[in-house]
Length: 423
Image (cartoon, rainbow, N blue to C red):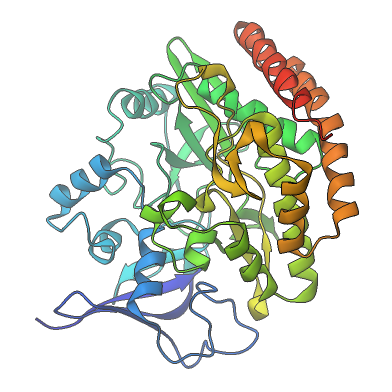
């Protein structure tokens, strides 16, 4: 069987070629006219200075662009007549608008991101938008980005849809180089008010001084949706621009099936080693942001902060910094059914309830942060986070129908955080 090829673009600029040979072996190489020290790499696991890149890094990167949901991948495989376990084949159909600024397209297919025109949007009526979201909520594995809402792929375990929102608040599907600007996620079945949970966690993070994705809530009858502003999209010179990003599993060439440290995935030491490969300013900023995020997650009882739930924003000349927090939720409202085991080991312990001063000093040492600075930062967040949750729960962004569960959640976090005081 002849080699198959896909073209890779970053915000419309051709950067390289993906290859899969007849045995399924993957490879990637940058175009000669793109490969310069000032260029943005596709991934830190595939540096521009190398002429080609091995299957492990390529496969982990491509798999990281796809949803974690096996039923969704199975359905896409049936829809397109390809193996659901072949990211290369799937992205040939759904790679037109992936995370960050990436487009993965069949060779010879024009990149819409390279077009100069923006503003050609297929607008959805309110009923259309509601139907899309209600369908996702009712049948999470049934959505198809190639058929329903543009040929995009979003990573992660939750069902979601990417749309463009106009100045008047209407939702639409771009038909030119306009990128999607928001991600909409129906609440997780069986976890009531999960959209509120994630909104309050991210809002409290921002109020506590941590970079985090901006979110808002849609509640209509039984339909509960979290709307997340894409931080990998921005406006520049009157145009929408895509910012390139990758999650930490992709940056470390770790397959998303191993995103949890307990499954052999990245831990603090692995991530600290990655940060040490960055430029000095990026290394220090990323290490401090990551330490703050670890503290925040322990204080609020967030147990799912695995390596895929952290991302790097990549810039020219292989610059990279840890991006805003996203996909953060506390386990506290759901009782004991999920436990308080951390997705990533904190010092010598997995249990959020047992993290000690010694553990934080150990984490700080791995990240190159002085012990005094780390403990001071912990105390600051310990004093700040409960008040931030309380404020987030009282803001007008929380509709009256959700004020009671919002207050309940804030009280849970406050009680949990108080017990995390270092002695």
